[in-house]
Amino acid sequence: MHIGVDLDNTILDATSTHLHYYNKASGLSFIPEDVNDFYLYRLYGWDEKELNTIYTTYRHYIHWNSTPLPSYLVSINKEHYLNRLDPWLIPDQASRDASYHSKMP
Image (cartoon, rainbow, N blue to C red; front, side, top):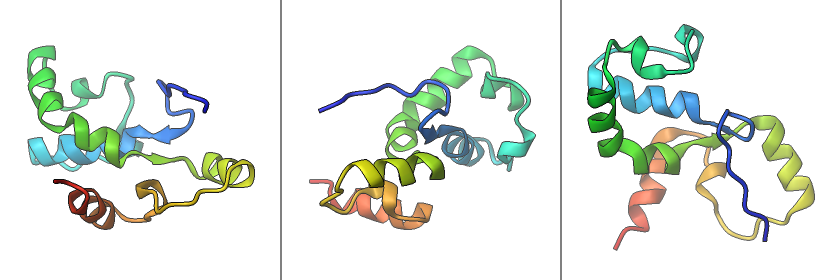
């Protein structure tokens, strides 16, 4: 088993997922092309306290629903046999959410 941490969108597209949930919390509708700062909360006009409150609410969903970048998914599929339905392989947000909720106790 290899464990890795992706901190800068090397493997996962975390930006789109953060924006999805931050938009949900704020009522705004930013897209990845709007991002001009590493600190996404500044785009929303939040301070760190507001960010922490919102992130605490959505953090599990953000990390569960972040999808691999297409180039990484091709690479991992070549090197590893994926023998279970992984939420990363489900193409749309609603289906990933349904998959996640179906696994909850």
